[in-house]
Image (cartoon, rainbow, N blue to C red; front, side):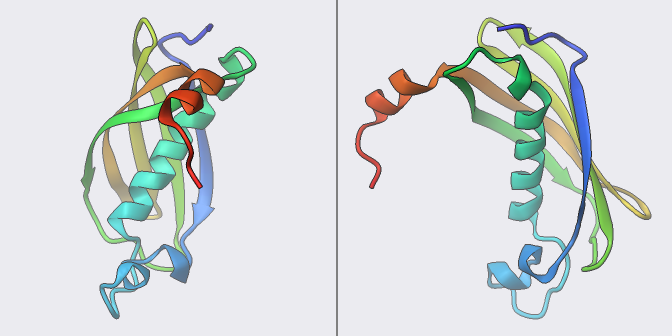
Length: 128
């Protein structure tokens, strides 16, 4: 594993109706849902280090501390960012942030652990 502090990535995603609080059961609230934001930022952290893992290895999320700071409407574009801030053995900590057209929509920290995928799945057992 060659994950180092300072590794980072960013990408953009336009908010659509499937990403809203309405879709999560909060009827009529057509803004980015917090669970969607969590998933997008977790995926961004995965992207930041995926190419630096050995074949057969992956990461799993173990902690997230996120503040959803403002409503982002359907049609606005998010810029999603993740940067490695600490590496402790197989544990990797990220600063994650989402910005929309008017500022920071969400920000926090996320932790992932590097795992040997086959061994992990064997330990977890049947999933289907």
